[in-house]
Length: 283
Image (cartoon, rainbow, N blue to C red; front, side, top):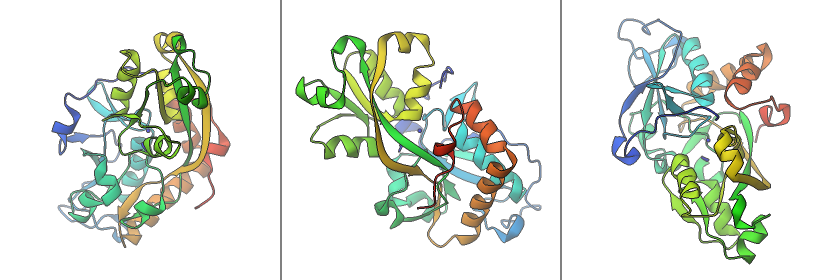
């Protein structure tokens, strides 16, 4: 990412204005975490009793977006597994994406973890601790079929306007290649920019593009002309030194991969199972 498919999502009005909006994610656990205790199973400390509070940035399908009034997605489903193991319920807190680089909301005790289709980088590691990587991601170049563009090189050669999501590795990659991309607040805004002709090409995480192209109207109008293997891996983050929660997340991910739950969720939210993307080596 956002560093996050074929499903209609209701976009939150004025996303930046909704920072701090609490949204309840689907979760099967009914344990209240111990009658007001801020200590969950396994001795994991949580910022609010009976819940695991997750910072994210909406919308970023297929990893997290509001569908039918409820925040859902691949990341949400994986963290639901962590919450269940801890005997609490997951709650989603929508925050600006910049927060994930600095770890501000984690440090301020507003969230226990962050899940946002987020690429593990050395810069971000200075401020937060990452879980084991749970997903390999590539960057895709999606263009309007009428643009005459057939590669990222064409975007530059033909001086075509390129868009990217702000504060993401896609935007960083574009800048590293000499582009001055039009910056959009969210993935939905990126797609809207392409639809309305503000830009004729965009660079963004390929899983997001996969979802867009499941919509026939998008598939008829747009095409992928490059898939860039940038070596990106996604991870969840916790406050520096929060070893117990980090280990709980890693345990839940490993268990889900071993028992088939991960594969099931991958197929539900992303598409045909890609074992190489689903089983990245630890960074």
